Length: 426
Ligand code: AMP
Image (cartoon, rainbow, N blue to C red; front, side, top):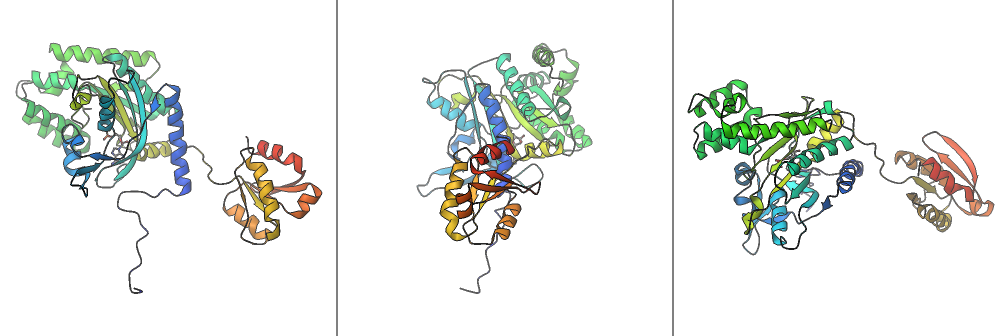
């Protein structure tokens, strides 16, 4: 078997390995998000990434179902899909317990999603997404709260109004406009799909493709912009009311944008997306909207719902661009050196006294000389080094090395814990 080619160490296309530092960064960012959501009374839920494929057949976007799902037949002949998004799972879970749950349900999930996309900046085949949903309230109040929550999450990460723009529109508005413009429902669906692709095509191509949908003197976008149709104007006025409320709350970066439609088929009302103002990151950071019909896909009365999702790939690009990535430390805070292998049990006991107060500590056990142990601690980015053995045990004195400052201090053993806690800012 020696002639076999060694296996590739690269991960599968479009997915990532998270080495400890990268995982620590992702965790730190999601921890800010989790805390902010818990503070607002949202509860965390979870489910398996494996779902029955039928869950996505009807209401997820056609592009995702036909081209982007990881679907396979299991050994029992069931069609199984790795979840490309969380909303259908949430709708399934809420529907299953609709008689027991206290509405409105305010839930969030942080987990991985899978889409067979062409890997590129901002797009991978496995990414992490935060989904936040409010289920059980119709109308503006819940819509306002969803948008405000999205805004607050970016604020919690340190983002300012000038760093991002929230673009809102409405499917009710689009449906009214396409109807008033004389489009059939099939044409309306294609028009909405065209708007969804608008940002990805040259202006001239959009104007060309748009012509096909001019059935009367004005096409849907013109109807929205110029007004004059009652249904269109009523929904437009409703959105203006929402914008006013956001302004009153000091949110200066929310705008109306009728080309925001969102790809998913299940949206029924308000839709919104959040964009980085820096053109280096042109993809949407957040996407969301109202989906009042989705829960009834499992039977029973419809339950009004609104939610949004954002992914770690675009969020990390955003945070890096605006210098907002949290500083993270992974690994130990104290390295306990052992002058001799026979000192290991004493060193372990000393290390335990540090762990007992919450200081992450490792003990050297592989028999290097003390000089090499210090070098190892430096390479591991551990801020403090303390050698501990028979001498320290006998004299009740230790030398604490501050590796970042290249300073050393001799301390009585009963002073060490206090000293380290202070130095570590704990
Ligand atoms: P969507 O679920 O398509 O509405 O997307 C919501 C958000 O999830 C986007 O704004 C991105 O932040 C993120 N996202 C969606 N698809 C991908 C992907 N293939 N790779 C990385 N992030 C993604």
